[in-house]
Length: 357
Image 1 (tube, helix red, strand yellow):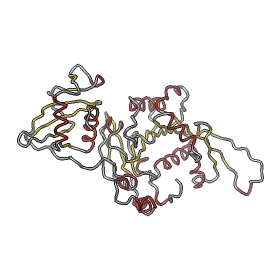
Image 2: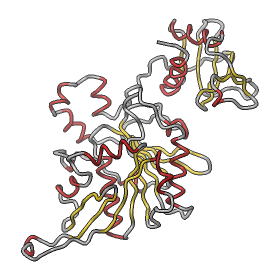
Image 3: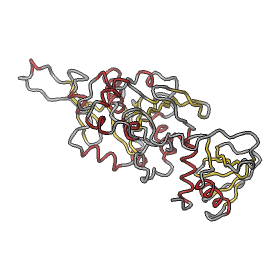
């Protein structure tokens, strides 16, 4: 946590008290999201003997944490969050031991380390099957939104996450799955898979998924925003897009640009699917304006651009097809509108693949 005071940190009480097993939290950088989950994991271990799993997308991310001079649990000990206990990393294993008080420091003391949790990489989790703890009750996927748009997500990462969750939980309904991220990009695998849409900062909402729900909180702390704004970087970046993202819990691409409600009387000219996401292209033939949403009519044939989206009821088209040229032209001329920021960003991802610069 560094020098950020306790009164400026995020309180995870609402997230941990949610009435569903899958919970997501996004918010500004340095708000204390990861720190709060470390405390939750340690608290569960000390009170009940439960363990927790800290997860990142790949091994490189885990190794970068382990190579850091600042140990993963050192901030917890430095801030004396759990008096009388010491913490360490033993490889990827998180460990805890009772530490005698200062007045007994002259007595020879050998810590008895207990395993409170472990770090895992989602992409290499298959190698850990059969070694997971039956006492695990908390699984955290940290940084589930990548800040660099040019770095791809692991293919099938949502299915990998579900596989990992099932391996830990064994369908015993004891493991809470928590996803943490900075507000970097509306377009990410978890939001896309579970139809999560932006919500105002400081608010929360339940999204229905299958026969269950996902709790999503856009974390905000007024004290943190004030504290952060008074820092050197906060003052230097005041009023910028970076400040909105890093301090004020705003997504970088939640701009509202070209977001407009589709008027009545538009015709659906084509339905498409890209990376599993359905799109409907509507046109107002009076004005020529084009409107994109994710609600294609049921009786409309669906066009796709890649074999991964092919199903018996779709048709594969070339990236140079007249339909794609039409989509490119309408956007380039400023005549294309969207029902949300997320729809715009996903549609633009498709156009970039087709050559949009």
